[in-house]
Image (cartoon, rainbow, N blue to C red; front, side, top):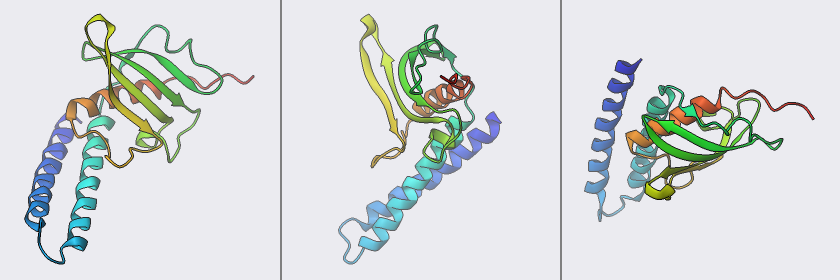
Length: 163
């Protein structure tokens, strides 16, 4: 799986570079708006594919000690997580079943991840709210791996007990 992920990632990178180059060539050209929009759409689709390939192949992260027992009846999960030895904090809305709005079509419909720095300083690494919004998924491979590892771990959470 790791080799296939690497090969797919390289192919998406190459295609993305070609699309970005074609997009740059259209800059300032007359009557180029439809082509520019089509190239931007294709580039966004490639970014999403690259994210899904990278994140979908990630191993589950190690959830922190309080992420499971802090799960409330409204499906919110909060806690700490370690991915490749780095610390992150997260808040996520995790449903009992998969959803079309779920990250990677899974159970996580909302996710905010903060990178934890020295002195517990936090900076937002990624936000997902039933979709990626205008910017699309994160383009950095390491961020996709972190998100994939977190989502894989959240998918293992048991359903919320009935009240």
